[in-house]
Amino acid sequence: MTAPPEAATLRIRGGLAGRIGRAPLAVSWAVVGLILVALAWPGAFTSLAPDAADPAVALAPPGGGHPLGTDELGRDILSRIVYGARPSLLIGVGSTLIALVIGAALGVAAATWGRRADTVIMRLADVLLAFPGLLLALLVIATLGPGSTNSVIALACATMPGFLRIARSQSLVVRRSDFVRAAVVLGRPPLSIQLRHVLPNALPPLLVFSMINIGSAIIAGTTLSFLGLGPRAPQAEWGSMLSTSRNYLAVAWAPAVFPGVAIALTVVALNIAGRDLQRRFERRESVPRA
Image 1 (cartoon, rainbow, N blue to C red):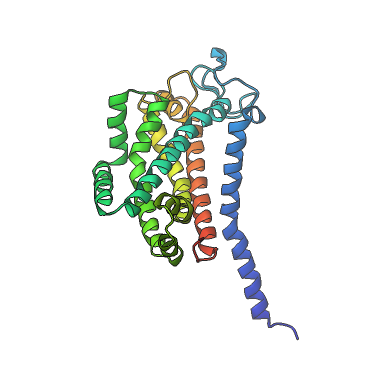
Image 2 (cartoon, one colour):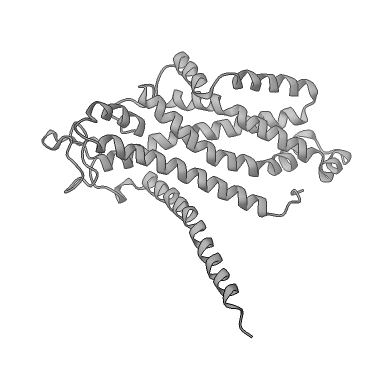
């Protein structure tokens, strides 16, 4: 017995809608994969050095031997975008990893060390959250000085409270689980309970937040570089490329547009991939791991 035409049409439309809905997800993971390849093997995308200048072709439009054009010194824009991905992403990933480690440790400690420790740690988080993230990063850089390393430290300080709050809330939920109560009754050391039971069950939301936070940190890092507080010239970096290209917008659009497109694609891809990770974690078995 065949299905009614209406049912067949609905199945076709549903399958088409599902494929269309999965397309941005596939593109996002593909972009993330290309970024990883660019970090590990930039020569796969370009054979030109990022600092090789040729004044004879300065501000050349896209085409010929320069697919994305050249900047004011005749340097290849594609090469500078590919090689500039490393410092831009290292600032985002490095600051996120530091914030994740410190925030997770403090969050678990706040949830398990008692009321006094919880009060002290959360008041520290409230003080940091009282400042807008970028303003706090600027204050840290004003104290430590400009540079890539100090940008990582500054952004880690600005984003750490978010990780702390997530780790604390997840740890409080896990602490009420039967297997944690059983471990306490059996006399397991508090540190063992934290490392073996509490922290592993608090990690999934922290990993999702990390993926999304990397995108935000990349934007903040490129903003610092745009202001002259990040990596120093002549090192290729997306934010500094935007900063120098703004003086030539009237005569050449490529030096400003393509680094901006690279930033936007990277951040959007990381956000979509992070949401995908979140859905995958939510589909997993809801019972925490003992």
